Image (tube, rainbow, N blue to C red):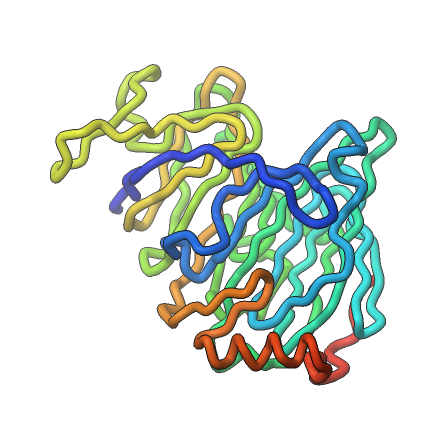
Length: 307
């Protein structure tokens, strides 16, 4: 087994999106595409309704998939194909925008005013850029949850863990998306596809991502080809970047650690961005923008969805 080295740890950056939603961005919008096939990752959470109630009014998507995972509060969604629904705590939506869709997402806090969720954008290969839009909406009760022998709890949103498969399927990049909880002081190894790019996003507690045979409290590791120590500890709102290998190792800190572990096989195609429209070439992008402004952006009726 080869352990994935930590190449760096970064902090999610405060950002304003939509009509005025305060969130933290792990990566996205024009950065070096080291997470191919993933394009953007946002953590939207708050305890003040003024931070999120303005929401994400009507906006377009083409050429990508959006994955929304809600931990607290609700997100009401509506689109140009007539689909509507509400994502509650623990629910997941994997939306394939494909050839084009207009939609809106409006957050609402829980009884205590808290809102928390994540949105991840995944690129589509050129062969699927203009596929018909579709939804995979998953209720919390349908997300497989596994507690293994050492007490680690994993929610399997997509992929597989301990023989349990996630409810989302048919995704081009063959991704894995796990919500992992490791209790205080425990060391955990998690198998990974060696061909996939991967990242971890910590949103509760903290710990060390490395070969955790070292004593607790050692904060860095050294790679054989690098004389500079690499930070491997990660706390709340930290994004962990990994190199290649077939497993990730983490040792939880004194408060335990909860994180998303996401991986997918790279598409390795050119990327042309215009906000939520992602194509392969500038010519395709210009066509999409022209259609958005002049009609013709919505290509078909897509798959009925929503709840």
